[in-house]
Amino acid sequence: MVCPAIIQERIRLGDHGRLSGMLAYPAQGMPERAALICPPHPNFAGDMTNNVVTAVADALSHNMLTLRFDYRGVGESRICLEAGDSALDYWDRVESQQDYGGALADAADAADVLEEMSQSMPILALGYSFGAFTALQTACARERILATVGIAAPFKRICFDFLAACTWPCLLISGDQDFVYDPSVTQRLAQDVGERLTIDLLSAQDHFFRGSESMLAERILRFISTVPS
Image 1 (spheres, rainbow, N blue to C red):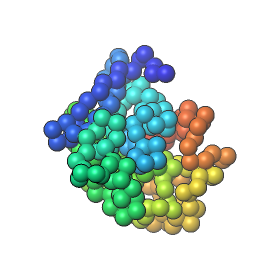
Image 2 (spheres, rainbow, N blue to C red):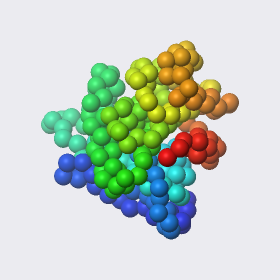
Image 3 (tube, rainbow, N blue to C red):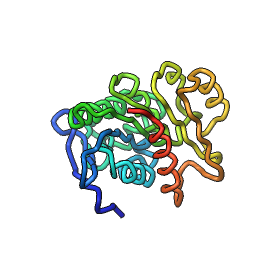
Image 4 (cartoon, rainbow, N blue to C red):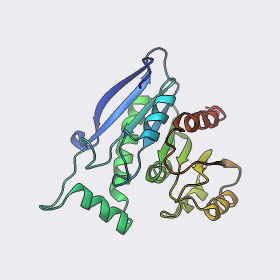
């Protein structure tokens, strides 16, 4: 259920309004920060109504301007396909070929819109599962990024070594029963990134956080509260 203290607006973004997004902000008061929230892979429950994405967006929107979106071919987001091809086929190829250019372009379009709407506000980039990759990669090219959060990052599927070059506070939060969690990767990242990286491993949690969304959101809010503006 959406808290009545939050206003939500459906928006179109990207070239010719190609993508569908959800903008949310507090009903009263002026937010001082903004947040981009990237969803999971489209072929793995990856849309902006995902339970984790929704819970994080609702929690942050009480005092922040948030934008979540659907990748191309998901929900009302449009995609150009060859005859006989489907969005499912397209995203299967993305996963099998690990060609993430389209997803990163979608996240960049969303980041562009958020930067314009938020004016001079500092921005956080957050993402869940595959969205952890797109959010953190997008942050690398953004000067206004204040901090990043990767939720249930798929360390066993995608390389996150690019985080060694990050210059902002970063939280990586996973469940200890997550099938894509790899402790050897987080140990290496901890050495490479240093004190800028916070690793939060949640006990008795899997990849999906069903029933634990509020707890997850609280951990993220706690981290954000430690990040100076």
